[in-house]
Length: 412
Image (cartoon, rainbow, N blue to C red; front, side, top):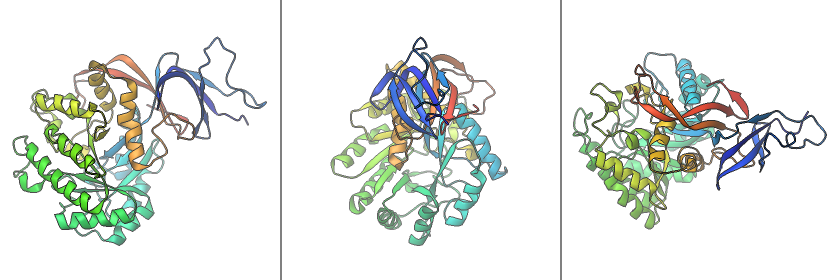
């Protein structure tokens, strides 16, 4: 048996230090080494201690990215079998360069709020061709034992809402319950993700931008910061959209609060007046905001030491928002226009969320899971006009050409 399973080479491999030509050596599902690039004119592949040479995949100048880790993915589709929901989401994920789904606990049937419901979802997700991790839901009735059981069962972190972010399966937390949950999660040395729109600032029904104003995020963020400052819990708010609140995030960090934020490509790419009136993106919680807010959100994301550390699809088919397949290309389309690099893309979509959850993936580096994506960053990719997501009919830049999950080639 050869020492190495596969060598994947490219003149543009996105490693944590930047972009360079390299041979990525894979063994037993993990990255064994990142070696100096050997062109096709060079002799073969790295030595294998006397065994036959491993197969070589030469991408030439196609970029090699770490597979995206999609944080807070909604999987459940009302009326569909849960296993079918996971298979469908996994297929869309692979087409979009996502190799790890970090599944939101709600809305779902059953909501992932106890160990028994977590096991139901784990069984439904068994055998899908991507990695699946789970967030445990925190409700007003969640006990310390529930949290401990969820973590023991495999939940990588927890999620709560201050309004309807988990509707209808996770009711909003009041301040006392939020602090209590934070204290319990701190004891578990885990992370709490919070949908931070404040319920008292939302209209009924809370669906339009006018009824979900930026002040709802501001008020919710103030509540989260106040609780986290007292308790000391690692906390991540999202989806974060109100750029006017970025200063609050920075101030919290300066005060020693371990607080980060998460946003989605549609908030960075689509101003509120662009999608047609029937677009599913209008169901977003929070909503799309103004063009000025979108530009300010980019500025906040690009600020040195920004607290906005992760960008994920925001895929939520329970409300009709299907974005997994196109989010990477949509984000790259907007980033490329701003003169940004593929290592920015990898940091937001792979390394950032993996580091946040302490997962051994999201980087092309020795010892990490061999979750890899061949990406043509110059290809124009038309989104079919019949696509059910918010990018229907758009021309995006960037195409996922091939995906490896745990070192194995996966169908895209």
